[in-house]
Image 1 (cartoon, helix red, strand yellow):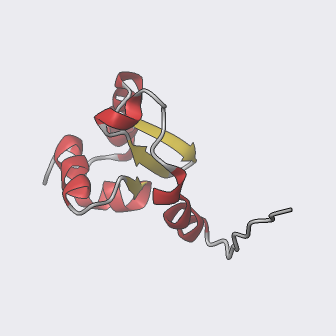
Image 2: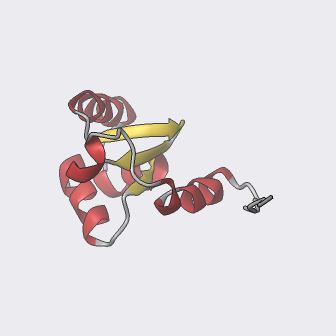
Length: 93
């Protein structure tokens, strides 16, 4: 069993600045109330943000001033987490 901080560090080591609640709970092995308390503490410290319920973004030091990482790095994983098929297009006049 690993702690939530070790889980976050492992995600960053894999190049992922995001995770889902079910994946984290399974990896950490905490009870749901303990997990939610740990997440709330990390959100207050400015380490995590949640753009959608059950999906968390890990804020690297360079992202903390802006409050979120570059959307290009996390929109695709968020849409997959939500099960939403999406398209991105640009309109140029």
